[in-house]
Length: 142
Image 1 (cartoon, helix red, strand yellow):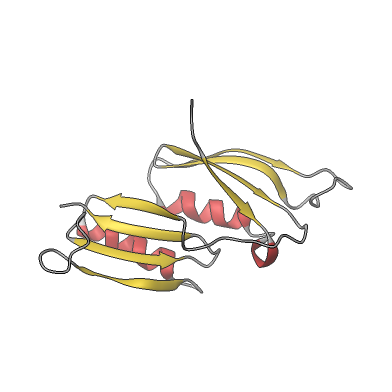
Image 2 (cartoon, one colour):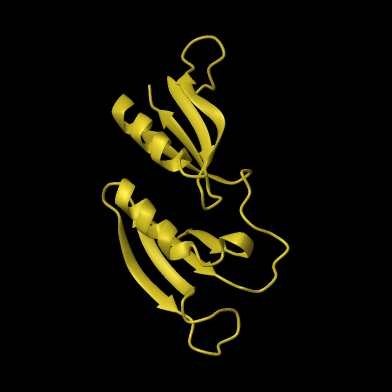
């Protein structure tokens, strides 16, 4: 059995999936776009510029992606996020800055939490949403 995170870009995010995966694979090491299949002309659910199904990896972990121009009653939510365990201060600072920039939002500022008030899993932590609506938790491991 294999479980893979599947990201569906709908609503205001529809049409931004390819830009998003190009961005993600550019900032995470050991990442690549494995496959992108676009909709055929006239195919239900999308248009030829939209991704019908794609696969990409971020630091060796597979993700699947699609987008649909149907009127869905849902989109991305911060209740589900991608948790990134960073190995250095420079890595966490760089990723947090890139992911929260250009229309992203900071939900928990990147700060030191070791000791009193810490979240229990690292010395530095931050939570942000990127400009595509994906939520990211970044943690500097102890």
